[in-house]
Structure formats: C-alpha cells, structure tokens
Image (cartoon, rainbow, N blue to C red):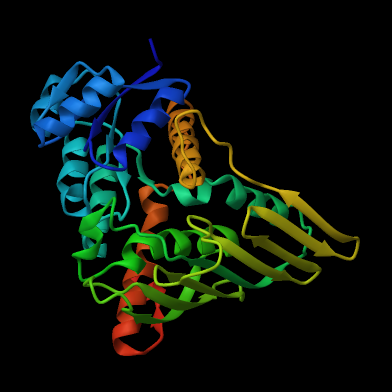
Length: 344
C-alpha cells in the first residue's frame, strides 16, 4: 500500500495526465475519483482501475479514507472545493488558474492556513526538465548576476481542438498560458515589483486575447519580457516549448528550440541537450508538459511525507496570480501596475 492515499476531483482532458503521473509517483496513489459527469467518471475509473467513484465531492469527503485531494476541475469550482478540503482537514492540490479572482485566491490560502493544511497549486511548468536546467545553471553562477531576461512561448498550435472551452472566455492567453510563463519568470529572476502589458486578439473565432507582451521590473533590479502567442505560425512548430534568454554580468544563457541550453562566459560556450524524458504513457509534443506533471506530483508526495513546504504553495502562487491580474489591468489601462498594492 502507498504511504499516501489521494483522491482526484475532475476527470477531464488534463486529469488523465495527472492520473498517469500518480501511477508513477513513489509514495502516493489515487484511491478515489470524483466527477459530475458519470461517463467521464466511468472512463477514467476503468482506465486506471479505480473502484471508488463519486459524482458528489461532499459525499467523497464524508466517506474519507484518503490523505490528500487533487482538484483538477475548471477554475470557477476551485474555491468551494479547496474550502471543502480545508473543512475536512485534507491537504489539497489545486489546478491552475488558482481562482476566478485574486480575492478568491487569498481566501483559499487563508482557509488552508486556518485549518493548518498544505495547499499547492499545480504550477507544473517550473518543473519542466529544461526550466530546471536553466535554474541550475544560474544557481551555479555560470553567468554571474542576471540583469535581463526574455521568456517566450509563441505558437500556432490548435489548443482549441482538445479544449474547446478555451475559445469561449473573455480572458484567454494570459490566464491559460501566460500564467505559466509569468511563474517561470518569477522562478528564474525573482519576484516582480511592477509590470506593463499589451494584448491583442488575432483569431476572430475566439473571445479572449491570443497574444500578450508583458514587461516586468523585478525586485532585484532585473528587467524581463514575457511574450506569449497562439497566433504565431513558424516553419517548425515549437509547441509546447518555453524559450528563454538571460543576460548576466559574467555571461549569457539561451534555451532554444529543440531543448538546447547554451551557456556562454569567459571560459567559452557550452551547449547541453536538456530534452525531457518521453515517459511510457506520454506522447510528443506534449511529453515536456507530461513529464513535469509527474515531477510536481512527486514533489508534492515528498513534501507531504517530510512535512516541507512545496515550491508552488498557495502563498507562493498568489504572487504569480497577482501578475496575471496586473497584466489584464495594465492592458486595459495602458498603465504600469505596482504588484505590491495587489498583494496587500
């Protein structure tokens, strides 16, 4: 039997990746699943051999028998489910985006703090193998102190075929993709003091923005650009790669298409292949994201077992979510937004 027993709420498109990841995680396993759609519940339950199946989360919590809950539902249900977990003293993982509003996110963190339970946001992008390699290179001092960066995700990939609801919301690319890229910028260059953003809708068939460019002023004095697009057609489709450029006082770093990390300093230039592992259940080009799903879930299990705070705790992710809110506010007003005012 696993050290930790988990329950999964939400059996939709992305949750299947999470179920595969849980099968690989050491020290934890899913023993119950919940979804309002009986058909999805049946499909996932039979695929992964889960006998305990619920259409009502309240009943699942009442029956108990698990040590944590993984909430893989859409954003509008997150607060109620996290607060339900807190009321039952069950540690919770919550899918991104954290909540519909920053106020909701703050309330969710407060509820878990009051209950004394861990809350982690499933912000898996920082756990991608190439992103971890960039962080390791910076931590080694290979390029000195970073002062400028660019974090870019530009693609023409049809994400709407698998997730048609993405075309329906008034908010799209910053909330769905930019949130990951902004979190990477924070993870690599530190917290942000202020930002300025511009957005555009190129695809006439969607309601939200599909292009965003965001200028970040980091608290440590570094400046970075986060640019994301689902309207960019290229000769070689880079989806789902995040490309990174970092300039430091002693050199530079480039994470380029094809998962090549190039570090240049006084000693010369070193090129390293930092491609993710193609897990047995994964498929290209999604394997980069799929591997990071497993990695963050292993991190959760290890942290819970050893009573350590997770890298993407609720409190940490408030700072990323604040950047999302600030970006939309800046794009609407064409003004620079101070992040500290949003986090008070």
